[in-house]
Amino acid sequence: MAKETKKTEQPVESTNVDNIVDRLKAKNLMSQAIAERVKDEIDKEQDDKNAQELKEAILASDYLNNKALLQVRYDRAKARITKEKVVAMEVLKDNLAGYVLTEDKIAKHGGKDGKLEVEVVTDYKTGTKEKKTFALKKGEEVWVPGTITPNEFNKKKNELSREFSKKYDECAATHNDHLTELKNAYPGWWRHDWD
Image (tube, rainbow, N blue to C red; front, top):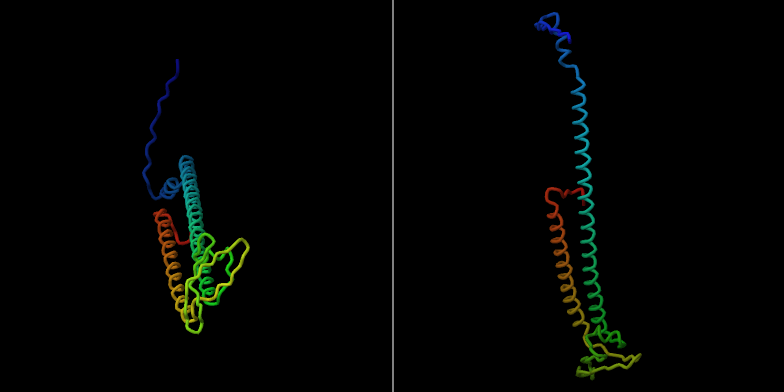
């Protein structure tokens, strides 16, 4: 048979002048349970911080990759416009100065099927012009005289400059629209330091 022991309740000591400091210190002592709970909270906060940093790094990386792809797309669009401008200015120069017509220039100057129809000056004294068709055989070259005056060249050059300036502006506006779409794809996340 087990022996029963009676617990005796200890009287609660009231706080007085002699024990106030000891009682306050006792309340401020850290227990093992508190230390473990705090350690768990610190670990959780560290995990949350690490998860947040990883999330931001992934989003920033994704944003920067997409922005780089948009930049490549923009650069290619500008390159296409620039190439078109180079061809147009070369044709304009050829129309002023005259040129040696080769197979590769027929298409540049608007010809089809190896033939190019050009209005050429037949009499420089009177300024008489007539349409002349140039057809080339493989490897053949033909001299085509200039068909515009320096004044006409300058007018057309200015028209081309305005036309290509407008194309560049439209290309830049489209690129800016795409960048806005990109930033809007990261609501609440996009930050200036990503750029």
